[in-house]
Image 1 (cartoon, rainbow, N blue to C red):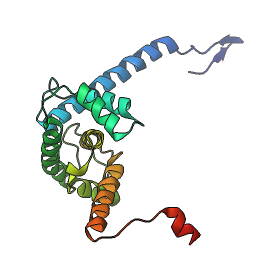
Image 2: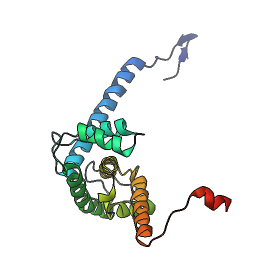
Image 3: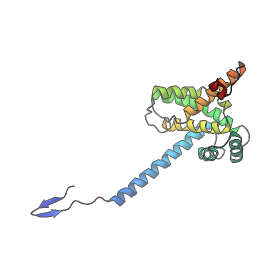
Image 4: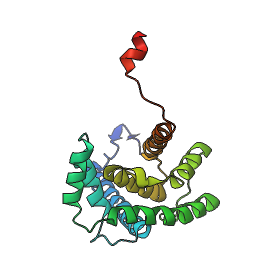
Length: 198
């Protein structure tokens, strides 16, 4: 409401109550973050078939942060020590997640609505193709850290439609498959410097 002048007397405009607005906004943001975190937890449990006591998304993200930039052997040691579970839990969780995700994502693509948060999916054809390629890959060739990233990426997609991280996984698996094909065909690698210097 603007300031008013009546009979030469200025009535100043009421100042906004910024502190109460800030408190309200903070409370709403906190509530939304908690709701989104619960949706992610529920989706992760639905995908993997594991309770949060066995394997949780929070645990996976913490481990991924710890192994970032380390060599594969060190990554595997950290993952083995952090994920105190019997062998094969990670691989079976990933396989289960892929199978469940195939059904869920197919329904999401048909309906155009996220099954976990009820929001409209805004996904373009390129991302749709990427997700379909991701779901069709043999992820058993991935390292343990890459399997954790794949689980995280899959959970992100089913909860909020983000394909972040999927392209890395797809490129990695296709690269490994191509390298294996070349190896089987007997193609030998050459030192890059010998190729460049002739």
